[in-house]
Structures are given as C-alpha cells and as structure tokens.
Image (cartoon, rainbow, N blue to C red; front, side):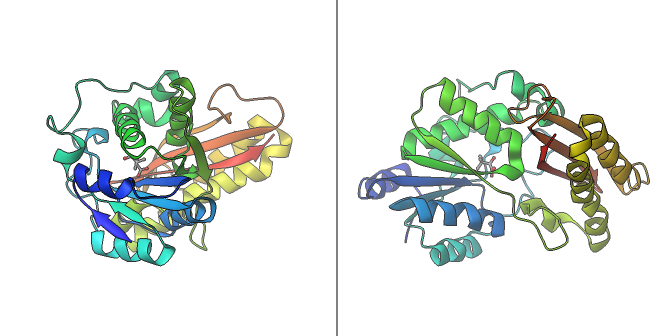
Length: 278
Ligand code: PAF
C-alpha cells in the first residue's frame, strides 16, 4: 500500500495502477461502514484508491470542522487490512490551491434543497465540488458511497449522470451496531446516555419499514409514534422524518421508497434512513 500527500505524488502513483480503478472518498475516522465500502471496491476492482480528507467546504459556520475526528494512523491500518493500493491524504492546500474553497462550485439541483439541504445550506455544494474534484483527479472507473448518507449518494449519482462523468457510482448498504445504531464517525461524540437515546432513530425506521405493507400514512404514523417517545423530552430533537421516492422525489403509491430521519441528540446531529416497500 502506498500513502501519498501531494498532488504530484498522487499523480505519479495513480499512473501505475491497473484498471479498473475503484475510488472510496472518505473524511477519515474510518469505521466498519467505510471498511464495507473499501471491501466492495476491493472485490470489484483491480486497484483500490481511497482519499482521506476532511473537506472544509462542506462544513457550515458553527459546524464541527475543528473537532471532526482525525485518526490517520488507525485509518491506514484499516486500509492495509482491506488491501487498499493507494491512500491519498492531501492537505487543504493540495485540494484547494487557491485557498480554502473554489471560485466555481458544483451546485446541487432541487434535491439539494430538501432534507439535509434545508438544514445545512451550502453543504451539498461543498460535497459535490470536492467529489467532482476527486473524480477528475483520480479518474476512477467506479466510486463507492454509503447509503447511510442517502441524499449525498442520490446527488452524486445525479452529478455523474447529468455531467456525463462516465464513472459508475456504487451505493453500499449501511452498517449497523447489533442494537441498530447506524455507524457514523460522529457516534464518538455521544455519551452512553445519548447513545441510548440515539437508538430511537433506527427503532423508528424499523417501525416504519414494518408498517409499509399498510401504505405511506401507516409508515409515517408508526415511525412518528416510535420517535415521539423520545422527541421533545430534551434528550432528542427531530429535524425531519420524511418518506420519499427512491430518487427523493414524490412518494410512489406502491413499490420501493425511502424513509429518512435526522435528529439532534445533545449537540450531535445524526441521520439515518431505510428502504421501505409500500
Ligand atoms: O461522506 C463523506 O465522508 C464525505 O461527504 C465525502 C463524500 C468523502 C466528501 O467529502
């Protein structure tokens, strides 16, 4: 496994990789969810590249950029274990040579205004811009993203389709703790008590999914009832609970849909989602 920092080092190492190349962009703090992304790339590609970069452009003022966990040594051990070929851990100046952002940004379309986009203005423009940069710099055949960030995955699919990037975007299922909590790099912020309250999210999604044969209203009612046990108690504050089509558009009458939730538990914001079949 090679670990490189600068653009020039990366370009030299990238030139030696066999095709097809799989890219797993990450912000580090790797957990079993990232391991699943890396493993999927390892299983399907001749060479696996991962980027390890906490992207300032996708954090809003007052968000957790400064305290976001940075664990490069542990991340490299995970990469080595999975059999990654090339890790690129650039500095901010390598990704943004003109300062901490770009002059031109990739703006998400209407899907970017919903859900997370409504609560975190500018977040998805920051995500799409850095993902667009890494897709251009790495030129992978396939790129892997978690379903845990379902809206991000949807927007990256739209980015690739709409701008004809010619890269296959692969969505990888969410990895959960045995008690249902979706793995997230932000789970490290949770106290044991907050972690217990956070389980309301996955319980609500499971309740909604189980009610899906009875239709959309039943999904929302079941999930809301489960969240209601915690919401407003001071332990958990729900930002949204929404049922949408798999493309995050209109809810279909029958067939596959997606149930998505976001809540604040203490000062930590958590998101989760699940596939439902109406
Ligand atoms: O999902 C993430 O970790 C980030 O949003 C990504 C895709 C690596 C872009 O910074």
